[in-house]
Image (tube, rainbow, N blue to C red; front, side, top):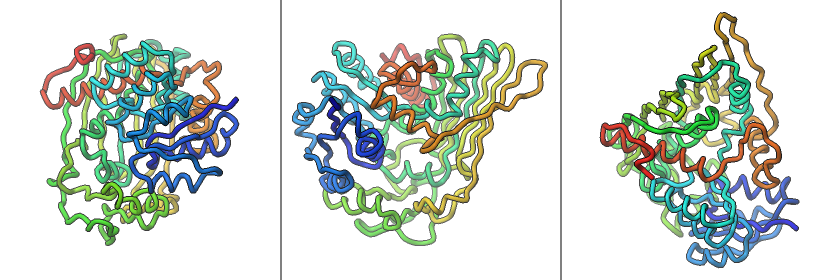
Amino acid sequence: MTRRYAIVGLGHRAQLYIDALSGEWSDTGRIVAFCDTNRTRMAYHNSRIPAPVPVFHPDRYAEVLALADAVVITTVDARHADYVCAALDAGVDVIVEKPLTVDAEGCRRIAAAAEHGTARLIVTFNYRYSPRNSAVRQLLADDRIGRVTSVHFEWLLDTIHGADYFRRWHREKVNSGGLLVHKSTHHFDLVNWWLGSHPESVFAQAGLRFYGPAGSPRPERSHGAPGLGADPFLLDMTADPRLKALYLDAEHEDGYIRDRDVFGAGIDIDDTMSVLVSYADRTTMTYSLTAYSPWEGYRVAFNGTRGRIELEVCEREWTPPHGAVDPSALADTGGFERLTVQEHWQKAEEVPIVNGDGGHGGGDRLLLDDVFRGPGDDPLARQAGYRDGIRSVLTGVAADRSARTGLPVKLSDLM
């Protein structure tokens, strides 16, 4: 008997799960309901699936839960805790996009609901499934460099990807928790998973240095009219049929504008962040996130008692002009990945990375298998639960608090 799934939040991210359950993973379950504040977005997704399903406003969420065995939650981050807790309390399994929630109070509520109920909760940390990140986990599990003593992790978002967080609802911390929660949650979880440890204390500095009113202010587009012109930071949603259908054509219902000015007023999240983290196993990490780089990718290095592991990833070598959203415009922007391990008194060894088909080097397929078919016997333990979600969120919450107060923050104080 296939499971019944409801999709809660019908924006961009929902498409991964809708397409999976309408295609390759249709044998594992079927979609029985959509739930969103915006009927236009629900109608768009209903038009894409073989058999349209009933649609519900969030004030009818109890009816949605009565129809489903599991809910897939892809809403605005700040709403995650409400939907997660209600589902767990009703005995309905939960699949939730990262971040699990945006603050310590949400973490406490979710922990209580998860521990007192019987329903399962999966947090979809897709970066764990990327072959290059799995290869790092394997090297550490094989003890190639001995006990890890320190980690250096630098993540760069370019002026396509990074800028987009400052156009959307993410630009307000009340919605996203800021990039230290919304985006860095991915990265903090990777380190927790790689090390098999958990963070204990955090010190951070952060600020808005590039985007926002102090950058290069210009008039916002008028409501309902696309932002056209030679400015590389303006996004023309009419150039992408999916963005147009999901957002531009849906503005009349809720007033949500997807293509705000990245240099406009109202932005209160940071774009430049530096974090120092101490772990229970005495490892330390230096971490930085920059949201306005000319290229996109990351570098992570592990120092150990017997050597060093380095992973360098370039996802885009340069950013095309005019903020192009057409995927064909990004086809020739380059990219590479390189993983090396070097033991003391030995030459560096380049480790092959075997990628598969699909997004994130085939990692998305592995994630969807775990979500819809179950993790099976995974020696890398990639499926993440609520404790993993909480630890990654609290690292970001602690970093944000430290940056505001100038003081180190213990994660135990937050819970």
